[in-house]
Image (cartoon, rainbow over all chains, first blue to last red; front, side, top):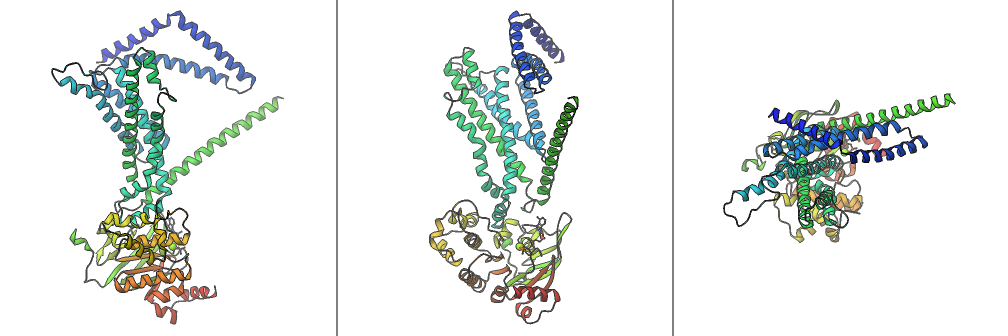
Length: 326
Length: 251
Ligand SMILES: Nc1ncnc2c1ncn2[C@@H]1O[C@H](COP(=O)(O)OP(=O)(O)OP(=O)(O)O)[C@@H](O)[C@H]1O
Ligand SMILES: [Mg+2]
């Protein structure tokens, strides 16, 4: 296993080295460097003070893209299904952690992890194993491949999975934010429903039904304008790569369906798990939890203020020194 | 579920509140309240703003739980009654009417839908009569209702659930005299004909005189006095109550 991995990494580095020998790459890099120089010139002219940042970001970005881009070919080449799932799992965990970093609500790491992995695994299983079912049926008149050709190749599974994961991640985050603000805003209405003998689950559903709509509409609209307004990268890429347009179009529609399902499953899971915390066992609004949220919010606001203050004082000092120099 | 009919004929009082305190964080909102609220009577709760009247009502239908102490409903500890079942029996009309988006009709049917109570169009119109709302309000969207109209819809919504006990938090605070009169007679009828127990928070002393048989006086989170309503007005036994009523009369 380990030696296999080392071999793969070595292979990748060799490939990068080979590619760098190709003169046209250097010509392209050189031409882009001219654009970069022009940017630096503009920046100097307008005294934006961004020059060093510009150079540094581009160098870093270039290196990252070369390295990871090359590893992508390794990942795309993975044939073993369990390894594909492992990579998806790792990506899901990373997505959940990213969500956690931007929200920091209690239990959000766990909720995000569950919501994102659940939706990703569910949908990718359908994608991967739809072919397996047909493969198991003997004597078919022709080979039926399923949603993607079976056995699944990394080059299909990983990019599809990454799209599904980022869709789930985004929706899980939106669901968190909406649930939080809607429940706090509609606390009186929720209590009115509870006072009529409604369950918390149902009371929240009454409140949140619009929130699903708001978060899913953009994706639905993208489907509706497919081919005219939105020319998604995947489809264009496939057509450029020589795949017949019809086949590429079918893939694109399937992908949108996958993204929407992932989004829906992730927001439902997130809502169910997250909204639970707003209620006590006695089906009351959980005042302790609301308090915790309010304190978090306050802390965040303070941090934001501090950061602004720092930036302002930095500017003031800078101006001061400039004036002194004059 | 049969055991949960919440009717224990042996117990004298409908609510037995035993040494109940309520805190939010370190803020003491109610302290050591002990009171028996008896059956078949309209009970009034009065007291200055911020004295804990609304909080007390919310405790009674378990929208909040006491920090310490116990509350019994028909002899049963309410902490042991399934909350939704408890709240079906004990309706609460909040101080501010929080209506659900949609029409008045949808609001009225919210509770009955949960509990499988059938309502005909006639029943709904009858419900509107009870709270002094014209019939054409049934199909109105709640968007654009006046404060007083919202208040009446909120009351009708609780009535639609056919509760055994009605907790009312200043239900007529923004109504005209005529609507107030209609609602008061509805409450009287409910308590006399249907044996619905009513507990009403009010700032109107006239209303307590017209409606209630028993009065609780809260101040600073404490139950300062409880007595039959007549006694409250003939002999103010407590200095604090006396000064409270004096100020009221001056206004
Ligand atoms: N969630 C809360 N957080 C902090 N304090 C609260 C909260 N809820 C109520 N209080 C405080 O508890 C006290 C009692 O409030 P409550 O609403 O029960 O008073 P009230 O007697 O109904 O007043 P009013 O006549 O104005 O309606 C008030 O001082 C109020 O500020
Ligand atoms: Mg109040």
